[in-house]
Image (cartoon, rainbow over all chains, first blue to last red; front, side):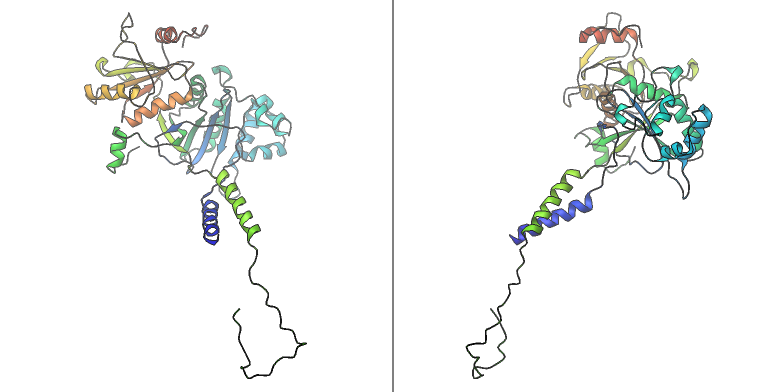
Length: 206
Length: 187
């Protein structure tokens, strides 16, 4: 039995070292697969997520220096710009990691501790261009990150519909942003395709 | 059990009342530890995420109304792909004929699906002329949109555009699928 136990503990140590805990996701999103291999998470990031029900979430993930909280600055600007009447404590609450998924009018309610369950959030309005609030979130976030390299990430669920994706793209385009990174799970390039031949020959292109 | 014999054979004998100290076994019962080990293995196996997400770049062109700024495409090099609901794929080459005779149906099948259509197009068209236009309709899923963008990477197509479907094309898609046109939103 001793060798058996030895192997078991070897496997245990492997999994303990190899494991990387998923950050808790408020909304479950299964991303599609793609052959892309670009790594994420090196720059400041603005993430827009779409769930299967068509709700849109906005998340701001800056790389803060010491003593800095750009997410706090963001809500401070939004609070002033749109007269939301948030208290200091509510703005601190916003600065914690996690997405926003409610219209501006419901923001105070969520941050003051009511309706904290993301499943009850209606999502950020994007459907029609007059009330597209995602545009303002992106604009304010981009202003804070001026002069830095920013990843504009879009994360959609397999069963999200194309119009949602189009609305999100529209919100970015209205801020003159045209380069996106779609979050996907990696998969192998199909054998015999030009891409797999190119990768086999050692050339790296994006 | 091995033990050091301090006395010799000729040493003095212990009396009948002196008892030899009992040797305690050095073996520890490992069963609880192994149990715990396996519990942890199962825990880590279930919680581990092996692959980290990767990003797919997407560059959209700036919307422009000025015709001189728009990209021109040769009709012979154009391939238009439309996406419908339930993983349906439709395509036509060049311009859509009025009787829609070049409107064809295909799928995401890795052997006979849209990939072979793209490869065929690539073989028959000079590389600088080829332009693929992707038009998902309002029922197409995000997964299919990403899949078709992936096909562009796989086939190494540099020029492609993601634009809205025209009402005429959408009508053909809906007619083929037998689904009603969306009311009042001919986008």
